[in-house]
Amino acid sequence: MNDMLKIDRGIEYDESFYRTIKQIHRQGDYDFAKDNLGVFSSMVKLDYPFKCLELFIDYGFDLKEHEAYLSYVHSKEQMKFFLDHGIDPNIFIIDVVKDSKYGYET
Image 1 (cartoon, rainbow, N blue to C red):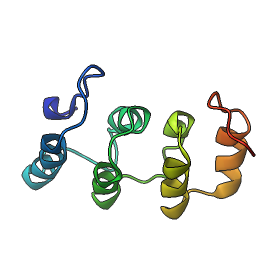
Image 2: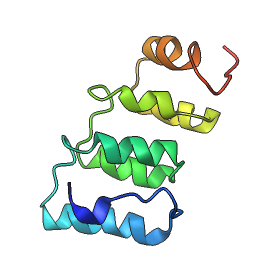
Image 3: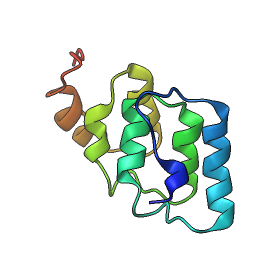
Image 4: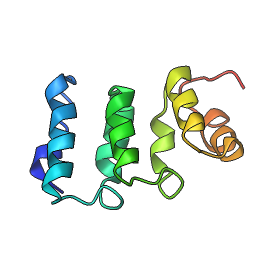
């Protein structure tokens, strides 16, 4: 993993993280389509802005191949974001809403 993409749980998001993602993509030294589930999951869990998540998707991260992060979804806005970006609602409802620790209303 590119050291620039390490997410520190004690540090809140700022605009520099968004710029860092763009810079790493320009440099071409990071495979956004593969080895980034941990980073993406952390961004979901820590409620990073959707524009950061969208960069990962734009740069090749396939939501349908990596559904482990769905257990971190904790808001209706996040839920809508993932449904809008192609997650199968049946998988989402079964795997996230039904068994969620966040107490969603099904």
